[in-house]
Image (cartoon, rainbow, N blue to C red; front, top):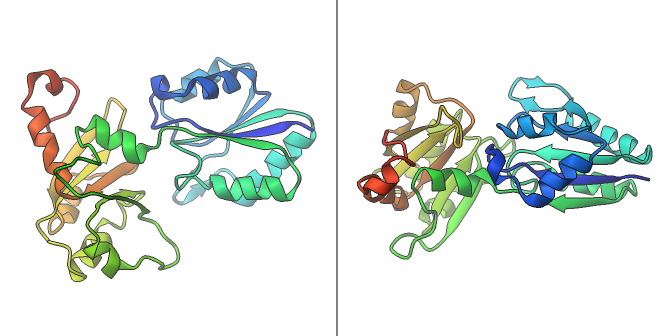
Length: 251
């Protein structure tokens, strides 16, 4: 029996890959990798492992989740070291929990290797610290593509927290309207960071009342991280400091 490693590739920058993840990539017999791993794809190309792209995008799945689950078990039972490489962190909206459950139920040894989640890393490179003593004392990370309506919008709107939305570009208008409907201040600052940690990174800012229109006008596309809260204003303080200008896009 082999072993499966559920590995986080981080937000897409190879230098943010953990040492353990890098070592496992070098040792792996097979790497099952997702679409959104950025320039980490160049790292896996230098390994001796068999590379299988199992990435899923809206409207196009190379493999279904069930097929991926079965493939991991099959390869492990062949005695292979399998790296299941996921963008960000496996347990932050990466279906890592589902895969771990499937492996456990089928008696396959596995290990979770955390990665740097884009929910934290992408706002940081945009000059937005998700926590700051002068701003909201909590952070909520949510998915913008929930199939089942389980979000308590009233509680979320009234909760004194910075909200980070992953996979939410398509539903940005719905998210904004729901938060305003249940009491969130329409003038709450919002930042949409498109393709964080890439050469084409863009930062679009606005307010809860108009961010959907701004994003449409700017033709913002996935992958993007959305930050909702007063802490978004903090980046304005950083981009005024010369040492930060080369690190933080001004737009």
